[in-house]
Amino acid sequence: MTTVDAPTDPLSHPAHVPLGDPTTALLQPAQIGPLHGVPRQSGYRAVPRQRTVSDELGPLQDLPGIWEGPGFSLIARPDFDADNPDGFFLQLNLLRETIEFTSIGSPVFNRGSLQSDIAMFGVTYLHRVTDAITGEALHIEPGLWLTIPPTTQPESGPSIARLATVPHGNAACAFGHAEDEEMPGLPTIPPVNTVPFPVGSPVPPPGTINPFAAYDLGQESPFRTSPVPPNITQAVLDDPNTLLRAALRGLQIQHITRLITNTPPTGGVANIPFITANADNPTLNSVFAIQSIVGPGGREYQQLQYAQTALLNFRGLSWPHVTVGTLVKAF
Image (cartoon, rainbow, N blue to C red; front, top):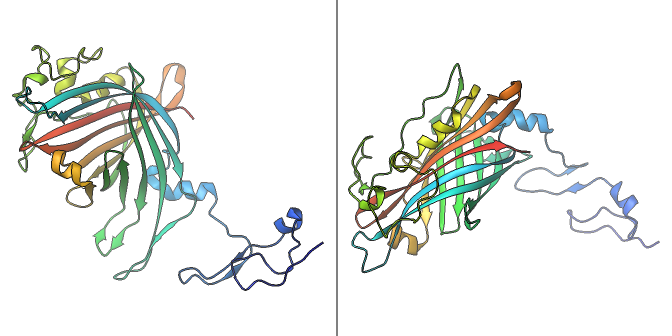
């Protein structure tokens, strides 16, 4: 049996490991070389046990798994058509969604210069969306959720972050916090705005009249999805959160963890030049609510409801792209 001399590379196999004998090789301790100031160690590299990782995830600890369910998307997208005086097409889609979350098994260290280092924990995710009627692929989004410990520079309590990438050419870093609530009844879900408004102006208050015919289902419009998807009423178009409230009727919710993130005043969205010029996306705001539910027969399960708004700026207006979903943890 052939042997080799001691290697000069500290990350190579240890000396005198027989080649071609995987059983013997597996019995050798891993040799960990210097890496970013971490001293060399002998023995196997270890990660925290899963229970420790779950505890460190804090408000994210119930995310790992596969979530599936229906959703709805409303987007006013630019329409480069000389016959379209308003310059947009209102696209309405019923969705079929899957989000797979996977724990990151080790801490993620951020090195401090104004304070001591911090260790973050998190999950990766992959969000897949298809049209519920046609089966057409609509969206795929790989990303991360992170939980961040309290810091002194900057001064902050515990926080969370969502990092999302979108194949149109956008990458968002949204920052926020988590809220826990024991539920004696159903939660209050406020309305979400779908009315376009001048860039830089405040979001219109609930009940604001939409000036564009495409948003009025009582009027015919060639610049709107036709036929309108089933069960999409004027009430849903005016406030897509109507669907979230409807999905909660008759349910008994025990507990909710809300993950609330926004791009302003921290974080931001980066776009490819084409997006910036044609439909700039400056913000992404979202609420993901992890709900512990007692269903029929006392069966307990988890549900994830979310609502998010991404603004698209073109023709001097901010056009809300609103997406909502109600997903159940399947695995």
